[in-house]
Image 1 (cartoon, each protein chain N blue to C red):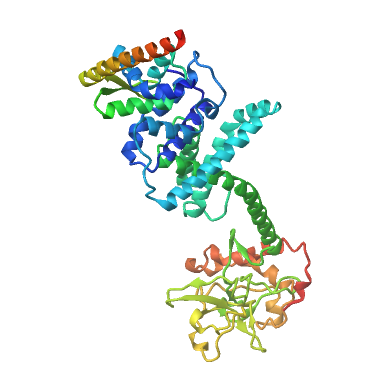
Image 2: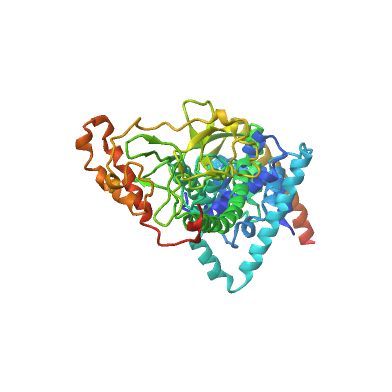
Amino acid sequence: MDTTQLLKGVLDVAVLAVVAEEDGYGYDVVRRLRAAGIEEVGDASVYGTLRRLYASGALTSYVVPSDEGPHRKYYGINAQGRALLDAQRKDWDEFAGTMSRLLGTEAGR
Amino acid sequence: MSVLDAGVARDVADYAARVRAALADLEPDQVDDLTDGLEANLADALADDGRAHHGGLVEEFGTPEAYAAELRAAGGIAPARPRHPLRDALAGRWREALAIDDAVLAALRAKRGWRPVEDLLVSVRPAWWVLRGWAVAQVLLRVTDLEPATPWWLPRSLPGWLLLGAAVVASVQWGRGRWVARGAWHGVVSLLSAGAALAAVVLLVWLPTQQRERDGWMQDLRAASPADGVVVDGEYATNLFVYDADGRPLEGAQVVDQDGRPVVTEPFAGDLASQGTVWLDEVPADAYRVGSPGVDGKPRWNAYPLWTVPIGAVQDDLGHGTLRVRPGSEDELLPAAWPFEQVPAVQPWGAEASGPGGATPTPTAAPDATPGATSTPPAAGSPDATPPDATPPDTTQPDATQPGDDAPGGAAG
């Protein structure tokens, strides 16, 4: 099964979860997603998602200047983001449970 | 933070610029929003050891266009309508060219023997940066008037040097990835760089040609003119004034050298294209010196002193190039200004014997007469008439020191 397709639907919540854990900048978020086992996601998809979540008001953003090299744009979660994350987490749990039951039943048959 | 070498930094900047170019249909602030920190992210990804690397940026991240599309899709920004059809079309062509570039590079990199070649090219890249700066400076110096017209490898003026320095520094900094052009400027600088490459080739071919041409011209000039003229105290005399034995001015005195060659002070006598003009206070225009006419009406350029003809009285045959006084304009001619009304008299050798007429001056008599002049000043006693100017005619001799080439022209006169 092509997990890239699956990921598209849940990338928002995955990114929110990573940022909720700790503020992070672009590639930092990519790296942490990968470390968590989400390998197939494209870098640009993550950056685009961060940008969209920020634009919708779920994330805050601040710039950390760097002595060597370009500045870093960090993202952090805010109250609206947390509410979104909670709602999506709930949705996911329900959906995953449903899918597991369905697939478990199917498999046990 | 990762420390990248300059080459990788450049690749990253190129890649980021192409991503931005692929988003060019968006509003500038949307593009900034989507691509803020893009270089840092790309560099981090390349420097991440925990990541499986695939080679170049295109192998790693896909084409910049695909990357841009992904950013756009995930960022929730719909592709906009093309707002600049022409610009978009040009950008499309540019991207096609870059894609070909990528494909060629990928094909080369797939070849076994390419690696050392690329390493070599990468190590000589700094030389190209300097050459690029030099080419840009040269082109700017050629199109501006900062420099003398004759081209040379290096500037000869202070502004020229400053321009060269600035161009080289800018080129090297850009090459090292220290100075990064953003957005549309990246395209401009890339185009400029390509133009500089072309200009460098043209300049490297053209400059030596120019210099050979100039050298050839200088040699021609040197060969063409074993300077006709009379040198006095290191300077060319522009006119000669002959005084007779009694010290009175003598108009129309014809002067020849020991071989009978006319002694002229105008090396380009009568050639309107080459003969220099003089500026006199008396006439509000340029004027030419002109010799007295001989019996055939043509000027004799060794008949002194030369008079002056204002440019307005010159027959209008500039196309033909020979200086002629317009008939009927003779009264506009200006006589020469004699340096002295009179000079002390001399006692020519043999004058007592043959009488004051001195009718038959032998060629040897004349040179001998001048040394005698040095003995006369005490007798003359008029200091204003005796200054060193009285002796210079003596120095016409230097002219005779180079008769090595006994040209057949000596017969003229």
